[in-house]
Amino acid sequence: MKIVVLDGYALNPGDLSWTGMEALGELTVYERTSPSEVLERSAGAEVLITNKTVITAEHMAALPQLKYIGVLATGYNVVDIDEARNRGIVVTNIPAYSTASVAQMVFAHVLNITQRVGYYATENANGRWTNSVDFCYWDTDLVELDGKKMGIVGLGNIGRATARIAQAFGMEGLVVTSKEQSALPEGMKKVTLDELFAQSDVVSLHCPLTPDTKEMVNAARLQTMKPSAILINTGRGPLVNEQDLADALDEGRIAAAGLDVLSVEPSVTGNPLLGARNCFITPHIAWATKEARIRLMDIAVNNLKSYQEGIIINNVAG
Image 1 (cartoon, rainbow, N blue to C red):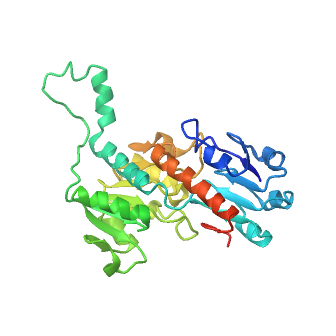
Image 2 (image 1 turned 90 degrees about the horizontal axis):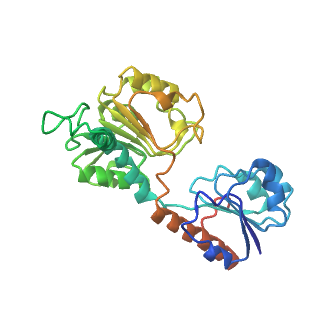
Image 3 (image 1 turned 120 degrees about the horizontal axis):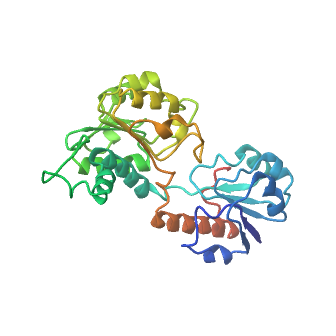
């Protein structure tokens, strides 16, 4: 079985091993593949493994031996699922591999904003504390989380993990979810989206990207937030209207934002959030702890191994 990994670098930049997948067939791993290289590199492959390399209907039509596409992520919008289904091509994804890591990143952003550890560490490295006339100094707002309201939009695995951490900090939980109040964890209160944005001190986005949720964070909704509120997005970049958020930050209508995702990635020159006031952006790394990547690799190998054994799991084109 010929197996081609089209863009393996993000998952394994050199600190993991492809041994498990090598045991399943003739494996070729490319660090990255441009759109113009997909067909040449995929020729003769029964299995394609992709993270962000797009596989279109045209690609599938030109690859008659293709039987299986493994997506190295939870989201699978890089594959034309309808075409794969029509052609009987199995498409698998990697569910729930980075739950703890993403929830941890939510609070990495929250704590960065409320405590500014990196800022003060840099100031001290440059001699500011050494030259201080007092035993301490601060010139940013320092915020205690205990008793604050944490708004969580979407209560899937990551939303629940985020809620547990928020409760450990003594925060009150407000949740937008399709679940009934009786099914929510203790201490979580179900509210409407408008109520959540208006009442929360921290809003964290954990909902899927759909036509209904695209740009759900916009000028009108930002206007309802507290001036002291913090927005966190580790979900999907297009959930946020980026110009509206940049304007709200620059005008002081909300206090800060912590973002691990943008609408276009990598970020492009001219994105208004790159220079916005109190906007802290990480390069889509919430998923990328070594522990999460090991888990991802193990699931990807097991998905393909199970397929070879006639047991299809995590098939999103079924």
